[in-house]
Amino acid sequence: MSALPGSEEGTAVTGLDSSPVEPAAPDLPPLTAQTEAEAREIMARYPQARSALLPMLHLVQSVQGYVSPEGVGFCARLLGLTKAEVGAVATFYTMYKRHPTGRHLVSVCTNTLCAVLGGQRIYDAVSADLGVGHDQTAADGSVTLEHAECLAACDYAPVVTVDYEFYDQQDVESARELVAALRRGEKPLPTRGAPLTDFRGISRQLAGLNQHADLAAERAAIDAPSTGAPTLAGVRLAAERGETAPPLQHPEPEAAPEPDVEPTSGAGETASEQAADTAVASADTPAERAGAAQHHPDAPEPAGRQPAERGGEGTDTPAPHTQSVAGDARERDA
Image 1: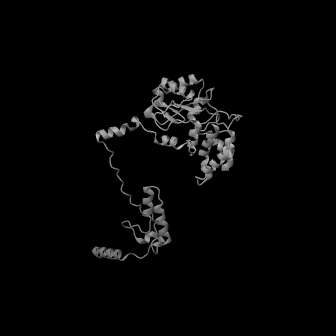
Image 2 (image 1 turned 90 degrees about the vertical axis):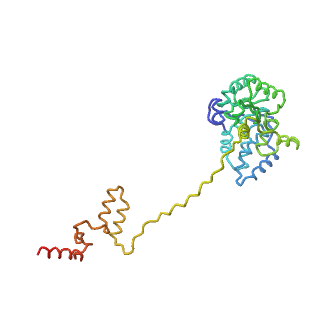
Image 3 (image 1 turned 180 degrees about the vertical axis):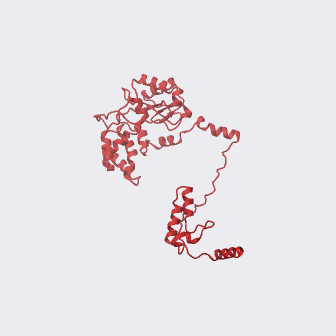
């Protein structure tokens, strides 16, 4: 059930979990009838049951702390999929873990802006304190550490998240203290967003289920601030300067194109005339088109050329105006 082999950094970049699946621990919580009932509740939200796979994998993690082999079979059985199909999804997304995760998941952004402002130094320091590398868990089971390619918070760089909650504008010492507090069993308040719970709790929320023990905790999560000064800086400056966005210009609807109408043969048109029309229409170059038009039966007569010269479809009888012109010439000669 593992993906392509690669380095730890490569795993973080590509989103493919290259680690082998570990056997289930003896004390792994079971997937109970209650878990199955909640899975079926999730499935009922979708027109097609297989669309529920992503939240169901989060549900498995909320119970067992990772997507275990048992969890893969659980999802496959309920959704009518193969284990290979479920495993392909579980190994593609980095939010699905393939071996047991610590009580908290600490993600350090090492992408461009965060790295320039110290993200890599933060990661290196935390890694040294924990004695682990990417996607590895501290010996006391408190924290799993990972590189994060982007945490979508460049205006707060460098950024660290714990169980996907934001701790903004960190430096080496603040990040080390944050991790030390987590190991002591504390839950420092995030810079913004909901109060911290733990990895299994946030996995339950990602499954679309309530992770809070009581109404007060739920309201605290909902009412927590989600934005800060860096995010709203543009809005504030625009208000101070009296700047507004230009009104939206609605483009005029374009007229419907005229339908292509195939030319039709004229009434009484002969077979040769129809063939000549086709030759003109299918000519590839101007020269070919001019030549085809010149030989068309409807083309005007060149000067000095008589209809009789046109062959079987012409006439052997000179036109009346031609006879008149010829007679006038003979009378002048006489």
